[in-house]
Image (cartoon, rainbow, N blue to C red):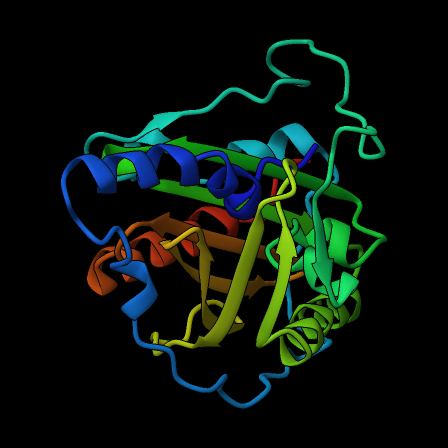
Length: 250
């Protein structure tokens, strides 16, 4: 099940556009967020030490929780795992979502979806003030080499998706721009970038870091009308790494 920043942001555009009109604001603060070229490709050592998480529940427990987040954030239940709802059909006739190029639709998809073969995967989603969201997913692989390849796959996709367009589930036009971000190195290897998503004059900014911790790769995404504070995001990254670093019991 995917409830990532891009999927969630599309449902917010109508609300944000209405808010912008009623307040006579431009509603496009995110559209002016600075974007610089993606940084150089980062290579993760294939022999990094670390025990994989074989149990999805253990991996889920090692993700950020509400106590790790800024004040005002609350967890979002997973419709399938937490609420017991049936999986949403990705081929529903009413779903008009698309991207051009098609492969760019996987930007910000969970790492486990971008590179198959994880022995365990988990995700967590949180909402906060002013429509902000913080999401984390993680994929634990059997070897450091597999984790290194997953880390490379994420970066390879970004290189071909610096600018692309598409439609949301209702067929509304959406534009995407991807650029680099400066952030202190984290874990065994890390790469940071920014995605600006724009539709009908409203923009959302997703600041992202992908980190390798042993044989686990985690992706942390903060989305809002304005970029998240760099210091806050750096602290969240450090906390995420520290929670994943201990070898799982058993």
